[in-house]
Image (cartoon, rainbow, N blue to C red; front, side, top):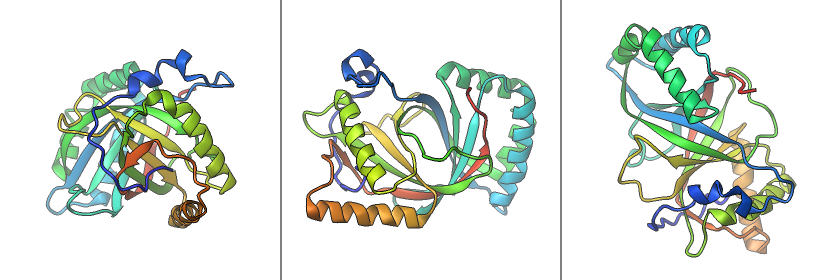
Length: 260
């Protein structure tokens, strides 16, 4: 899904504001993309600990969240699979999602008031998490199958920038073309754009991160094969983005709460 170009574009960030100019995008069915807020932490295990150690603390965090969070908050853990040590130096990442920034802020306040000192102290004994950042998330393609609590899968993540002359105003029509292409090829995963916000590196040079979910590595491989065949036949939709090579992670849901 436009993530195989392997080209870095250092153009200045532009596009998120354009996405929210909804009257200018021109969705033919008056359907606007789903939007979320995400927090991300990159973590390493402390000496003698592993994912089992982290999951024991996560179970306590989940119990606390179930009792005290008054806004939806769902979480996934992703662990490196196809990555380079040059690009990925963490053991796992924590991805938490709420329907909007206010809901994310509320759950953060409730966590600080109810679990940060006790459960948080246990978390710090088994993990060393480097920073915490917020992202605005726009859904370019909804997964064909709804997520389930505890679900496992795969996630590819690429850095992307708009090609010269392209902006967020071009996303709607381009997404439509790519979604039709992916429907034709049987792709059932979801596609999201993560726009950096508070806490993200000030040195970040791209416009956003492109995240794509897969139910299996076979599905990922089939997508690559389809893209290669379409490129040879010149039937692949136009790419308005320059994206670097994706990093692929195993993903596992830790908590799932509907925003409805």
